[in-house]
Length: 457
Image 1 (cartoon, rainbow, N blue to C red):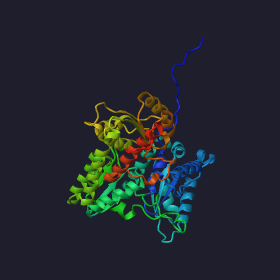
Image 2: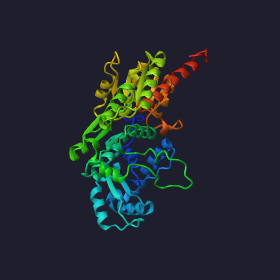
Image 3: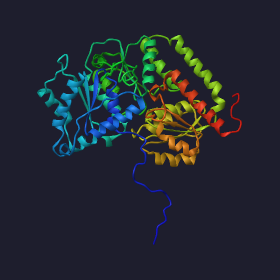
Image 4: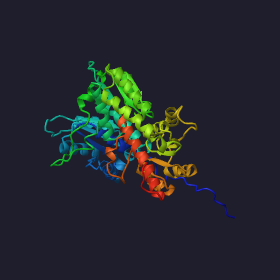
């Protein structure tokens, strides 16, 4: 007797719509001045992450490793961790070492904070100033969540392990989330425009998008400094960006333990979200919005008017990191594009509510928001929808090709195009650039399909 199979049953993950936790932690540590990311695990894990980050950022990315093998999996990785720390401190002269665990070291039960305390009691370092660097530890089992979860865990670790009660200094803490180096530079620019001194954490806008140098720098210049992290407790407020943050985020920790008021906002993409950011900056600075930023807002409104005829009534499938998908969905809804499917591999538990919040009052039919999915599931749902466009990272290329629709690349990773680290999506200017990319992708697609080809548009 045979059984007819009517659906493609499978139990494995097919091309996950996420990456692993320690990768996100290593990226966050690259945003601290003089920091060396250190992976307590196998050499293969560090090699995979270096390869992944280099192909997106086009920069050398050093990630140290305790290089565990079969023996350490049985007897514990403590000796390798301590030996690796001595090597990386003496070789790099790092001011900070960010130590992230892997699924191997979490499974065998290594007590990394305890091992670090033993190391500090035993070790002798040979750095130029003879000072022991700050050692930050964060648990990031690869099976515990996505790369974005690892990123936020590392930011919480650096803030909670370094920030101290400090006299009020009038600055602000700006926690941007997992965005591009171009977006980090933009956030720093608009904050300065209001006369605010901001501690941007993490800030990998230079370490992962550096100018060409005559000689190789093992630890590139740039990043939030140790002094800035330690002084976060004296800030007048923290601005934390992201709708889908963990319940215990760095911003909530600063508010709970150091009494720094928290302002939680979504990624500033589109008019509504950008207006919310600038409202917060006006209130914190006591200044009006600078004229140049007002002009940028006006140009964005003008572009929406000019471009609505190309976008009205279109449908989109958006996928990738939770907060990026939420930001894009809200912006597309403002433009008259229906976000028919919003999908992510993350599982914060806040994703569907965040999609509903940013599209409220803008769409006639609620967007379908699904989390914890892979590209097998995204493909099945997208084929039923028949979208006009896909918006997401490079992982959706095969699906876009199968559906015969354009793919607009945003987020991480972008492996099959040049300049992924310089894609600007935030604030009025970034929203403008994303709008241009979306309209031009639709126009180019139509030109390629129809006989009329070139023409006045």
